[in-house]
Structures are given as structure tokens and as C-alpha cells.
Image (tube, rainbow, N blue to C red):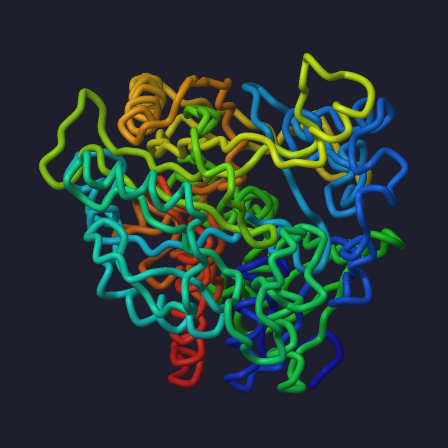
Amino acid sequence: MPQNTYDAIVIGSGISGGWAAKELTEKGLKTIMLERGKNIEHIKDYVNATKGPWEFPHRGGRTQEMIKDYPVLRRDYPLNEINLDWWVDEKESPYTETKRFDWFRGYHVGGRSLLWGRQSYRWSDLQFEANAKDGIAIDWPIRYKDIEPWYTYAEKFAGINGGKDGLPQLPDGYFMPAMEMNCVEKDVAARINEHYKTKRMIMGRSANITQPIQERVNCQYRNKCWLGCPFGGYFSTQSSTLPAAMKTGNLTVRPWSIVTKILYDKDTKKATGVEILDAETNKTYQYFAKIIFLNASTFNSAWILMNSATDIWPDGLGSSSGELGHNVMDHHLGVGASGMVDGYDDKYYYGRRPNGIYIPQYRNILGDKRDYIRGFGYQGGASREGWSRNIAEMQLGGDFKDALAEPGPWTMGIGGFGEILPYHENKVTLDKNKKDKWGLNVLAFDAEWKENERKMRIDMKNDAIEMLEAAGVKNVTGFTGDGTMGRGIHEMGTARMGKDPKTSVLNKWNQVWDAQNVFVTDGAFMVSSNCCNPSLTYMAMTARAADHAVSELKKGNI
């Protein structure tokens, strides 16, 4: 092949980019994966994965300097000294907030696959049909039957633990043995399920393996997942898809490669390749390929499409419908309840389980009707308070020391994840007046949740209190945070798929209508947001799109 020419280009190396690279290389395509940040090697570069809190200067906390340097990251839990290098340098990569949006980014090989919460859930037709039934936005161009085999395919490879729960709103999948609830969670779940005469609380499903798979060792219950797992106990690009892709001999990985535009040939109506800016040298290079998979993450994928403007589409590649950059979604959270659980003082739990309980959506489905549409789920769990609890009566001396040597009382808490509707006016655009370190225009965010979400949050709090009290939890207190968009780190939309090129950016195979050898399979393609974690759907849809891409390539259709 000529220099800089490949069969396929994958832009981004996170969850969906890793999957794209695996699928394309295993199907025989010479592929280059372009990542805008640094390389991180499995195990070798997990420098803090085996350290204890006492081995950090500030015990894993945040300093005043960090608070000053990371004005966005400091808004929530991600800001800490133990994995600071895995979060974006905000001075180098700023963005504009027309309305506040908490954008937490990881620019490195593996992206946020190294940092994600690992909760993995299938969608059902209750979600895929919701837009059509509610008469909002546009209908999904697919249904559960279209993606069901690909969910299974993704689950088999990634390794998802979970139980067969038989819930219509949360289809069962191909699971490894589920992690166990602890003694309090089991009793709380039994009481809640009995009270409501339905299976409402289940064990969470997460991408932590409970049995060995590939070259990976099962989860060790360390709960240090976001430091990188030397055992490969959770799914990440580094532990799973990248080794599989490299094994083929068909993959080239190029870090420090900021893709600035997709190159388009108006005569063939196809993309020919991409232009990159080397993040270290500031030199420009071009790479060429027959197909391109755009997996830069929801907003950066939109940015690349917008930045690929031509005289045909001055607003960017894929902008012909007027929907590019629009329909920004996330999950709103920060609402729930917690309380104390009496008894069980002679009981404890094993290790540090990196998973918790889950309560799937139960509002506005299966006969329930509220004064808002869609719904919410909860994640949470029970635990015993540790040494850091405050014991007012014993602040000094031997009694204080003895008390802290014993585990504290049991607490139980649940926090809600609510669906945000796909509002056309929620959007990102290019800010022509503000540039990043490399002289590139940044994104401007103009998105918020509205009345439907506000109404939902009332139920999210009240229901949480009601459920815990029904289970006998004492001193239950509800809480309501600000729920700022972006905080869920489940950004979706900006290049939605659909049935009609007049109302969508992509077709049902994740192809850009305006250039059908370009595929977008990260969160940008989402048409609605559901209320559960979306990453498993990205994996399945990426595998599905790659299969279609290679098939169409062989037929000469793209």
C-alpha cells in the first residue's frame, strides 16, 4: 500500500473506537487507529493501580492548585491526585459554556474505557419505540430485534456479569455469574419487591468479569477500576479490544493525532481520508482509506464533522439535515435518598465490590402513567461506615481508637439516573472566537434540561424515600443536587440516526447520509437516551456497523 493509505481509519480509541478497530482488523482490513492523546499501555502504564492511599502525598485527595487548574473537573468527584493524568488538561483544551455543561474528557489511548462506571444494560423495544409513541423528535430506525444478536456478541467478548431477571424493560443477556448482593441489600431488595409485588430491585450488571476470559483474570474486588486493572478484570480498550486487534497484525495505532477534518470527494460523494495535526510537533499529515469509523466521542465526533465543512456543506459533513450538533442528551442525576439500617452488626461483606444494586425504570411503562414522559432508574448499595466516620463523643484517646477499629453502622443509599429528552435546541456549535492550544476552534455548549426533567426529579426523590422506608430503612433522608448536564458522563446525540436524510445525520447502519463510507458509532448516533448506561449499546452497534461496512465494501457499494 502507498504510504499513509489503509483500508480503514478509526478515529478515537475509547469503547466504540476499540470495538471498531477489533472488528475491522479481524475482518482483514488494514486499519489505523488515530488517538489525539498519549499512549497508555496495558499494565505497564497503570502506575497507581497497586498503591494504597497512604502512598499519595494527599491521600488521593485534591489540592488547591488542582482546584485552580481544573475548574470543570472540580465540579464533581473525578478531580483527585491518583488519576489526574488521565483527565484532559483544561487549559490546553477549553470549551465555551453558553449554558453550563460539565464535560469530563479523557484524551489518551483507551479514552474513557479506562475510566467508565462499567454498568452495562440492554435496551428493549420500550425504549426504541418511545419517541414514536410519544410523538417527539424522530423514531429510531431500528428495533430490539435488529440489535439483539449484536448485544449477545458484545457481551460474550466483553464479559458482563448479571442475573437473569426476566424484566421486559431490561432484557436479559449473555451473562457471567452475577456479583452478589450483601446481606442488607438482599433483605432490602426482598422487602421492596414484596411491597410492590414486582421485581423492582436487582443486582447491577457490570463489565467486570467474574470468570477468566481471553488473557484476562476475573475481578479481584479491589474497586480500583479507574486506575486501570493489571488483571484485566474490567472491559477496556487496553484489556480487551486492542489486544484482539493487535493479534491480527492489521492494526497501526498512532497517538498524539488530532483529526481536524474528514477529506471529501464531491465527485464520488465519498470520504477519501482524514487530515491530522500532530499534537506534539504541530505538523499536518493526511491518511487515506476506503472506510472511516468516527468514534471520537459524542461531541468531538460532531466537532470533526463540523470542521469538515466544504463548499457543498458549509456547516460540516453530515449537516444537510440541519441536525448536526443538535439533540444533545445526557442523564440527569444527583437525586435519591439514604438512611441507616438497624441490626446486621455481626455481618460484613467480602472485599470491595465494584458494582451495586440496580432498580430499572418502572415509571411510564407497563401501565404506569405520570405527568411527565419517560422514566428513571437507581443505582446504589449498602455498606458499613468506615474509620473516617465522625464520632462526636470520642474525639481523642483510646476509646476513640478502639471505636474506629470496628466497622460503623450499616447505611443504604440509592441515586437516580433520569432520561433527558432529545430537544432540538440543545446543541453544540463551533465557537469561532475561541481556540485551544493548537489554534483550533473549540465547541460551545448550549443545552439544558427542562420541565419534563424537573417533574421527573420530584418523583426520583420521593420514590427513593418511599422505597427505602418500605424496606425498613431508618432515618431516611432525600437529597437533590443540581443535576447539571454532562454530570452523568453519558453524553449522546449530535449526529442522530434515522430513516430520512432530511431529519437525521446517519442511516440505520450508522452511515453518514452525505458520505456513506463514513460511520459514526459512538454516542453521537443516539436518538433518545433511555435512563440506563449506554455503553453496551455503543459496543453492539459498532460491531453491527463494522459487519455491514465490510460487507458493503466487498460488494463495491462503498
